[in-house]
Image 1 (cartoon, rainbow, N blue to C red):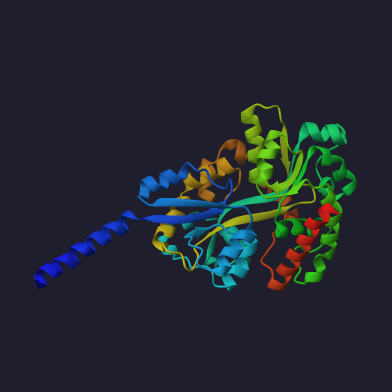
Image 2: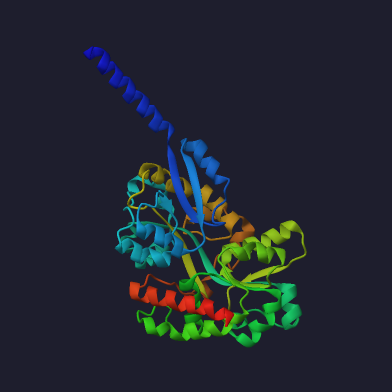
Length: 365
C-alpha cells in the first residue's frame, strides 16, 4: 500500500510538472502601436512561451495598475518620466542583468542619461525613444491657414488665433498631462521639471485658451483619424504619427501628412521595459526582454514603429528611410533644444492632474 501511495505521489508530481511546463506564458502590457506584432509569434516559436499581450494608451493607466498592486503582468512598458516614482514605490523587480545577455547592446551614453530616471539602471531599460511633436495634413493646413503658412513652430498649436482656424478640420491633442504640460512649459521658456506645483499655472492658462478649439484629447485615436483625413493637425508621439503618414501612403487616399519637431525643440522620451515586483512569471519575462533586445528584432521593431532605439547594434537593421528621418533619429545639432520630463514628487503630479482635468473641462465652456 505504501509503495502504491508513493508511486501515486510521484505520478501526480510528474503530471503537475508537465502541466506547469505546458502553461509557459508571459503577460505583457504595452503601448498601442508600439511593436511589430509579427515578432510575437517569433518569440513563441523560439521559446515555447505563449504571450498574452494587452494594450494601454496612457502612463496614468499603467501607473494606477502598478501602484494598486497585483497587476498580473510580467513585462510592462512605462514612460521614462513615470519610472522614478514607481521605482521609489517599490513596484519593480531588480533586473538580473546576467540573465538578459542582450543588454550589452545598449548605448552607454543613453544609459548614463537615463540614470536620472532609474539610478544605476537597475529596474528599467530603454525600449524605444521618440519625440512629442506635430503632425498635420498638408493640404488642409494650406486650405485653412493659406498655402504660404509654414508649420515649423509650436505657435500653430499654442496660439489660439491660429488654432481656432483649424477647428473645422479637426484638432487632436494627447490625453497625456505630463507630456503636454511639459511641452507647454518648454514653449513658455519655463522649466518642465520644476519641483514647485504652482510653477505650472502659466502652462494651465495657456492650455485653457486653446482647449475650446481642440476636437478631442486622446492618445491613440489620432493615428487613424489623421490617416483618414478626419483631423488636420495633432500634437502627438512621433512614431504614432509617422505610422499615420505611412498608412495614408499605403491606402493611396491622397492624404499628405508631415511630422515635424518644431524649431523651439520638443520633448524626447523613452518607453522603458520593466518587470513588476509581483510578476508571476519572472523567468519568462527575462527571456522576453532578452528576445526584444536582440538587435535584429529591435531593428525590425524600430522600422515598423518609426521610433529610434538605444540599442546601437540594431541600427544596422533599421529601414534606411526610417534611419534617415531627422525627426526619428534627431541630429546632434538639434539635441540642445530637446528636453526630457523626469519623475516628479507626488504633490506636483497631483497638481498637474488637477490642472489637466480643468483644462479638459474648459473645452466645453
